[in-house]
Amino acid sequence: MIFMASKGKAKVLTSEEFKRLLRVANEGKWAARNLAIIYCSFGLGLRAKEIASLTIGDVCDDNYHLLEEISLTHDMTKGGKPRYVYPVNNRVRKALTAHLETLQGKPFVRPLFETQKSLNEQWCTNVKEY
Image (cartoon, rainbow, N blue to C red; front, side, top):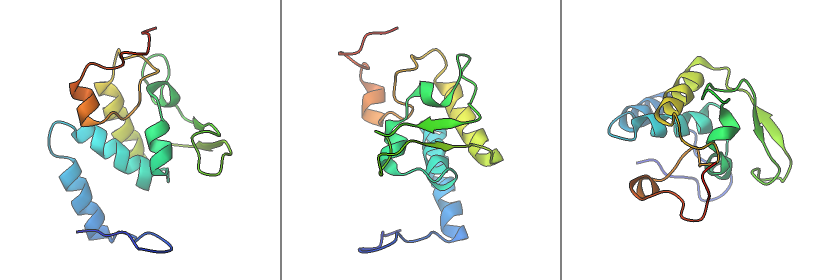
């Protein structure tokens, strides 16, 4: 089991722990989503709030192709300052591209990473489809 440090910096995973995390995440119905979340965190350095704030349209073009530059707006970031991330690592690109393939045809305003619960329910009773 992996524990977070109680104060200060979070525990850094060893190479073996990270490999195990990837193996576990790569199982089941939500594997593409889970791997993409892991690579957003470990590969792009995004915080949980930033990952949760992303929409489909934040990371892809009109053809659902991954953007070369992902813009994080001030309301997405911890410090309230906009910043950019660049998915140049091949593993990061592969994971995000695989996840985007599962989202083809979905509105760009939808969250990039929905919870399993929201995936099993009808999405958005209060957002109009565009």
